[in-house]
Image (cartoon, rainbow, N blue to C red; front, side):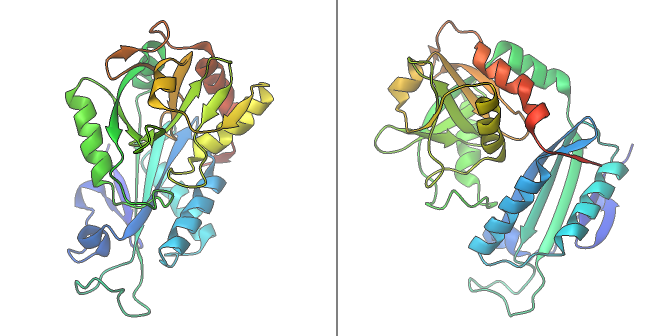
Length: 287
């Protein structure tokens, strides 16, 4: 079955999809993006994802490419054309096409938008949840505004590649003081020695993950104590549980970090409970 993409007002075959060579996303990483899960024919947490997109666009002063209602219609149509009932869609907005120059292009230059969609294999996700994943730590080397979800992801790419080369699936950034920040594409959580669920505050230095936000509500419903408080690598390594969250994975247990086994080396029960309750709590928008 052919795949389809949406590029600047047109639905095109995925194999034919292209942007201009002077699109500022290509030239300068001058753009932002969102990734959203689709499960059982429902878009998960769409409102929160679009609210974050709105914030990212405002923070770097890019105009919306279309009305929000129109964007939702495009997403739905693209998911239908690609027959995605379980999978994801990727949405990217850049400052548009203009002669290469560091300063912003002339007023009125339209922003560019690209949306792609694809199914995912639930067996892969189930295996990671059943077995847990491995992670490595990496020194923080990204720009200061990681709270904006920009397409400038080269440090994340290099960290993930390093993880892969070491037999791991995620890289966890650590600040100069030895405190955990977040994963290359995830937020990081632990269950500490007192049984409390902890994650770094999202006021600065990490991305406020949408799954992270919804998981706070899930934890409250499960009567779990959550603390938004930094924790060190040492605290992570001695935690009862470690897990990472993201829109495409929800809640993956981490059973090894830098070659050191976490707890008994098996996925913990808290991560499982959170994952199982997540979909009931998350917003669901029908395709």
